[in-house]
Image (tube, rainbow over all chains, first blue to last red; front, top):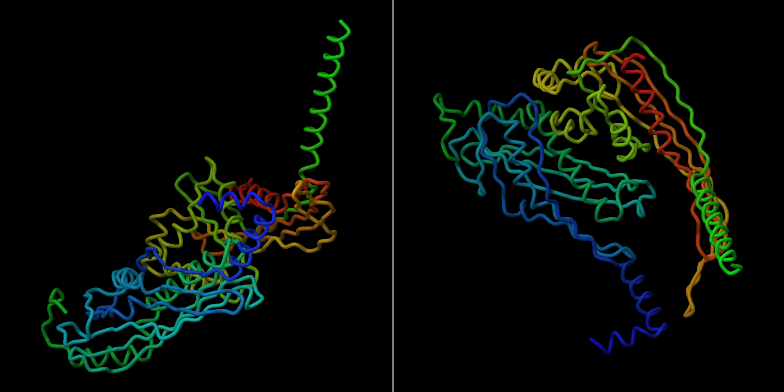
Length: 218
Length: 230
């Protein structure tokens, strides 16, 4: 330790250290892990009683990508999905429950969110002022007997102006957070009108028992 | 006696020199900015103590002209006094989620009546006491730059030599929507331009024109007058 400090007193060693720092920072690893809360949507609640399946795959979703001359990028959006769907369900559904497996339920149906795809772009790549994140959510729609009836694809988009952020990590964090909010916004506004959901709702309504208990477990 | 006199003279000269340097620095370190503020009023405005306003940045999806977050905060902070209650942008967007998100926010005042017909949203806006929504769009851009500067570091020390100059142009427009009247109340625009300099003779001395700050204070002052109907 003391030898290294003595060596750095020489100007040539300082220059080498500075050069290594500059080269190293050019290929830095960017690790983005979302950790935020989300607002509850202010929309008319759906009367459908839904069991929402938050799978371990969804909760551990991390997008990893290596970009030439820019370094490694790791975007962890999975860690906030449970919180995101919890807030979303509080506003969007009259009665809901969370579970982690697809299985027969006493609720009207099962809703299984997945992140099918995530892409991102930095201003250096797109030659714009924006960090951008695209996500494609897929909601698998099951009936109460855990039979798959359809899927609803929901694209989400978030962007962040580079003038507001100091580096790629901060910019992509903001863009990924905006994409998650965008999904929640589009879900809450379009849930009752999206074609695959309407088919699912009518199928679950036909199969619904005459008496139902909103407080039963999924 | 002679020595004392010499010391006194040296001290006085030193003070004068120091004062001159400080005075020059104060004058020089702020570059010149020219600013213009304009207003178009479509109807009379006014506000009570229980009413609030919110300043929002336009962040709709296709926009390549997104307003800086710090500019929105600057306008809101400059409006925030005893006369006008200003809601925090992020808190407002969260409280009204999902109606003011980039893909769902109303683009024109024509969409306002339909939006205000949403019962839950209308109820929330009433709770917040929202009277005016102020949409800000625009940006500060560097329109030209010239000069060069070279910096070097050696064993004996370092320094810079050269001269840089750049011109910034700020152009912002605020649309004021009246939620009580359910229509646009008017527009206020603020433009500013200024040239910044950075001469360097060993040490670089930035002489910065505070273009964005001028546009912000100009816009905020005009908005205040507009809302108070002064």
